[in-house]
Length: 151
Image (cartoon, rainbow, N blue to C red; front, top):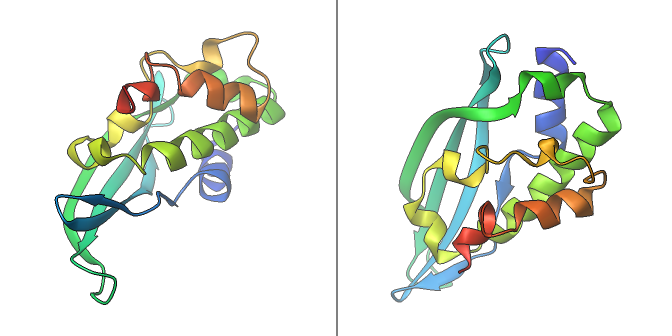
């Protein structure tokens, strides 16, 4: 998979992704994660620049306003995983999007950095059994990955 193919796959299957609005301290909030660009494709981990935007409003009648923007350069996928069958990589990104939809609906998300949401340390593509989007969503929702947002 080339960097152009990876960028297209990320834009098709993952980014941008936003969670459902939630109430925190009498203010409605919602979070969105955006892809800025794919960088350093020849690096060991392929790195991307992502932006986490936190929006808020006081009531349903008020417009959504940006309250916080965090942009970060972070690992997205290991170089060796780009050589895996495309169907498996697609399934991973589909599972990642589902997990991010849940994570971005958590109040804790507004205090996190974009890299915290990508669960890169214990990468699910290293799991041999995970083959479908549902497998990857389940793996990503473990406490050692994105599940930490809900504990």
